[in-house]
Figure (cartoon, helix red, strand yellow):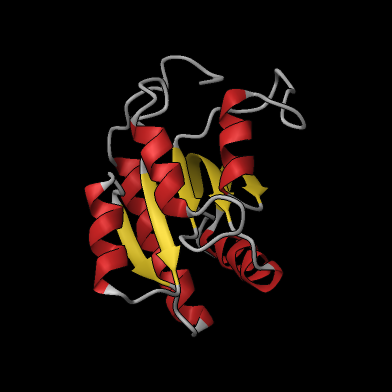
Length: 153
């Protein structure tokens, strides 16, 4: 039996739909083990996590070295999060992968203009989601990632 993949990644995922969170967790589990996974429900929570604000003030929490993010979220959407990230030098280097149901060219273009590292349409097929996540994990595990120089940001 092949050895289970061990991905040296600390993932912060922002997703507001409970069923999508469950699918993400299941697909990631099928891909192997990541070092850490923390899930927040919207863009404001993602920023609060990065800044170390309550309820994310635990000094032992792990700095993410990759962000998986939905685009259309309540309170603060993914585009606003990208703007915030890219204007905060301490967090601007964290790779951001967008997973969105939006296929609008303007959303894709705006996400890339704001610094997204990749944009994927959320697949409706679980096997396809697993394949995309496996590719993302493999790529970012092999790619050199800049260190987060200050955390919280």
